Image (spheres, rainbow, N blue to C red):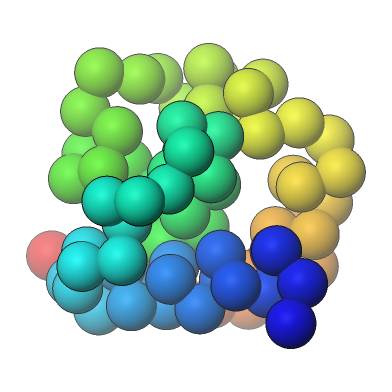
Length: 76
């Protein structure tokens, strides 16, 4: 499993409201998980979406869009 697949697994858990595995992530990894899971308010309270997108970078954003494009955002 590569790094982004690992982060996608954590993002799926975060989407469901389980943030257990987010505590050990680097700032960039946490921002990826927050964006992918739709949990910016819960995981990156002091960061804007624009900052997170810039920090994650174009390669990770391209992966995120490919994997998460059809996924629903959390409803709560």
